Length: 114
Length: 187
Image (cartoon, rainbow over the protein chains, first blue to last red):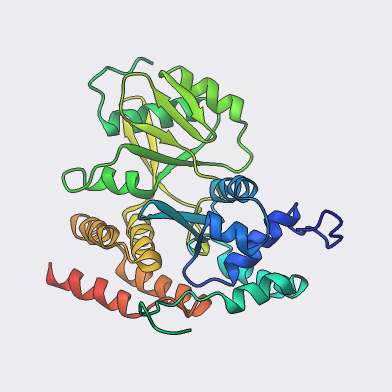
């Protein structure tokens, strides 16, 4: 992420915006390291953002194996409106959308050629 | 107020709610701990979830809970040195899915009070947990509360609410409503 990024941080910081936008573009959630890679930020910075959002009830995380998958909390009382807003906001972050578009979440058989 | 070392989950719930009430903060028991309140033989929890009014001053909550031996362990979480139950204060407002909860039940035990979700709201809350995440345990708890408190459980209100949630978010799987209703009829 560039330090001179002048896009408005609707949710307080550019990292928080990107985390939320990327999660809105994900069906099954992402683990923190992958989330950080997808938005070109550090895992520590993303982890801090996730903790704050989780405390507010906006995102949830669940353990999968030895890691935790983070996703938007669809039980949160403003979840539908938030997702709509984030899908709009995603247009301000074309690089995040592009990475999300090419990131495969569906299962893929081992050994199947790309 | 001193909590005995053999204090039960419900003892702690009443004590915490009462000291907060006396401090001017209305805390409503919700989540799995509210379910445990209604079906203690079937479901137990070590976490006690209260939602206090938005804007409640943390120092007032800290001071009130200190009188029963609870101290803040992390943001929104309080622990007792010798009791296993943790008090958690999820950020409000009090809501189930998209809908705010404005009424609750107030139980009394001598001079103690406990504000708690109604049985219908506990069923809605636990069912939503199953609906959103597929958690079968939450479905079982919702069914258990609906059966144990059948006279108070408002099935018509529950069904109407599922339709409102579904209209707002069509990605919810409607077959899970059917599963709940079918299992409820089997009781």
